[in-house]
Amino acid sequence: MEQRKLGSTGPTVSAIGLGCMGMSDFYGPTDRSESVATIHAALDAGITLLDTGDFYGMGHNEMLIREALIGRNRDKVQISVKFGALRDIEKNFLGYDSRPAAVKNFLAYSLQRLGVDHIDIYRPARLDPDVAIEETVGAIADMIKAGHVRHIGLSEVGSETIRRAHATHPIADLQIEYSLVSRGIESDILKTCRELGIGITAYGVLSRGLISGHWSKDRGKADFRGRSPRFQGENLDANLALVDTLRAIAADVGASPAQVAIAWVKAQGADIVPLVGARRRDRLTEALGALEVKLTPKHLAALAKAFPPGVASGERYPESQLAHMDSERPMTR
Image (cartoon, rainbow, N blue to C red):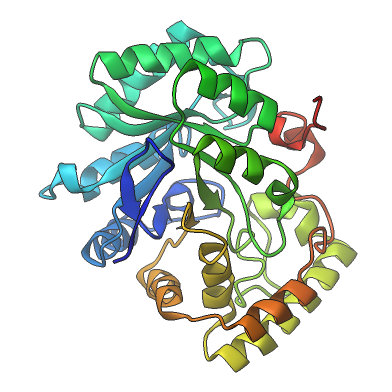
């Protein structure tokens, strides 16, 4: 497995990471035994980066990872945890809490659920509008000094916040959506991260399955994708037409659409680590095949022509969620 370093100060991880969210939440029914088997298969294949959030399944995802790591060498795995999202009994989101006291509280619970003595990368899931990012990062830095955290990450924040956070303590990586149909970071955020030596862990590389080649118009949308603008009405028709183009390019490459989409993200720089959200071993096997895909200049040109920035129809999140995303706010400098 190829290795990549997350930024100038972050850990060295596998070139592809495993996003574990869907094993516990948001994408419909899950199979615990298959989820554990998928994590095992990922580790056996050389994947070392496991990404989770303490609010995925209300702690279920962290406990799932704990179960999967029994008998495994903890020191060979990097665990990335997002925190701060508040949810109620019905799993509705209530906002975010990134106060220093909350940071230490959330961390204590995560360490307990994961059954570990430290978390490799700890990051606020979103920017808390009521708490200065310097206070949140400073609290995590205190936990680094105490030995409970190794590195600090950020998630879905803009350049101004990134600079302020990094001035407080070195940031290892920014976790943010990046794919053929979600290229917003290229206008400013990616440049800022590269200037400061901050890595990128890219989630949504298949746009929640939309550009995987496995999605169809008649597929049920009982999970949260039913509320996603890109999966609705005419937007879905237009986006699936893009997938037909991707499928044609993939056929010329000799790979699946999902493999080409993952390989494209990986090819955007050695400082970028795609996170694949495979919930089953067969999907993981397909995703790992992206490591063998070689995109020629001809293929990259064809993809650039077919998927220019802004090509997707519909926003990547519902408006209610975009309102909480600092990464979507206009630059102020």
